[in-house]
Amino acid sequence: MIPLESFREARARIAPLVRRTPMVHVGRTRDGRAPAHLALKLELVQTTGSFKARGVANMVSTLPSDARARGLVTASGGNHGAAVAWAGWTSGAPATVFIPESAPASKEARIAAWGAEVVRHGAVWDDAHAEAERFAAAHNRVYVHPFADERIVAGQGTTALEIFDDAPETDLVVVAIGGGGLIAGVAEATRHLSPSARVVGVEPVGAPTLAKSLEAGRPVTLDAIATRAGTLAPRTTHALVYEIIARTVERVALVTDDEMLEAARWLHDELGLAPEISGAAAMAAVLAGKVDVSAARHPCVLVCGSGLDGSGAGA
Image 1: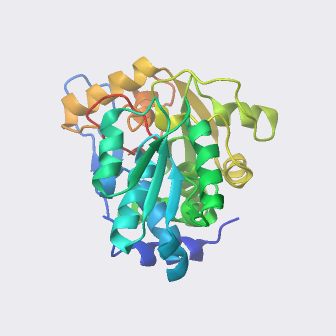
Image 2 (image 1 turned 45 degrees about the horizontal axis):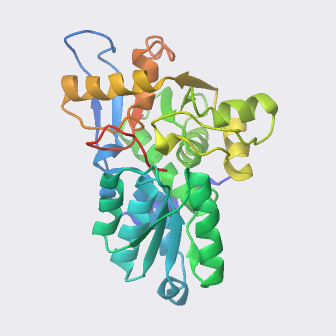
């Protein structure tokens, strides 16, 4: 269990570095597909374009200066890599980001814009991750894991602190799941702040890593993944986040790529937002009827990442 104080310390640590993102209510829409009282937590306007900046800022801020000076290494399909590149830029640390061959050029450009070295390796995130870990060990650099680190999880969980500061009556939070760092942090913090509030996760049908792990009662590795939502597509999770999710998340809903793409378009057309399809996954579950928010008095959906290419790729 991560204590509430760890989340509060993370919030204080990262406050000068990241944005406090807004919550907005959907209100009345043309098609009426979402209830007007549904709140959206807009992490797509976070520094670097996603919630990832929170966890990375918290983790990197705890490193000794000599460790930062040796350099940061990570593997990502885009969003976490951009956050690590940004953290390197802000702290003066060299950063190397391994991305899979499937990562869009726009994601590579976003990472490189912060001054990081970008190395393409492997077909999927898991391949890039294995090579990045090898590289970090060989060059005595710090590996910044996207979810298997309590400091990362605590940083992501600061999102929940803001939600309950702004709307303490929140009784349902819907969160997309990739590796599980975001939902683990949000769900753990929610249990401290409002034990009766429900947390529901959302994964792609083609990458049900946490759903299958929860069915098995342990972390499992998928044989293959089949989704355009690269942010939500690690083939395996980690014991740290699995334990938290198994204890705190009510269930995991599955959505198709088409449902995520439709939700991204809906958020753009109805609210003027520009999420990547991964960032729209939680909203997709609502619009597709996979998660019923109508019975909740104060539901909240996380819109967790931005993107103009519609690919949703980025671990």
